[in-house]
Amino acid sequence: MFFAAHGFPTEGGALATFQADCAKRGYEINGAFFGLGGDVIKLMVGAARAAGSTEPKAMLEAIHTKGPFEIVTAPSVSYDNPWHYPIKEVPVMGFKDGKPILVSSTIPADVPHFKK
Image (cartoon, rainbow, N blue to C red; front, side):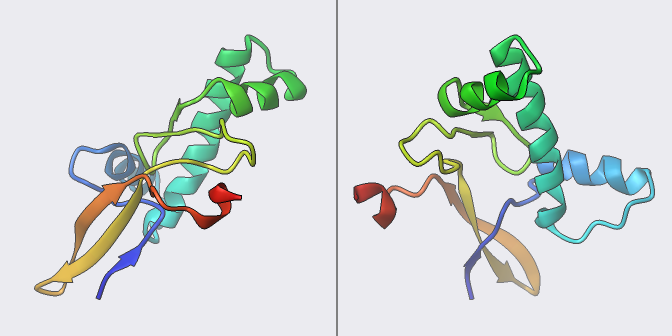
């Protein structure tokens, strides 16, 4: 069985580090989904720095045009496309000996909507 996820906690990677830090603070970690909160914070910090401002319109413009931005669940994310969809690596996971394994982690190359 294989499936895609928001992220995969590779040893020493940003998601694993984020999850360990949150666990130390007493938060219950429920998979990679928890890392999306970290993505939002890192995206907002990156946008404010790229915009040189915390003004919402300037930050949104930066998100749409000045990526990629470092995040937690993948090395980076960019919204610099006509639809402003997130472009980031998508991990494909499987299981070996009953434990989750990372099969691949790539940016999808064939996204049907992007062909419109």
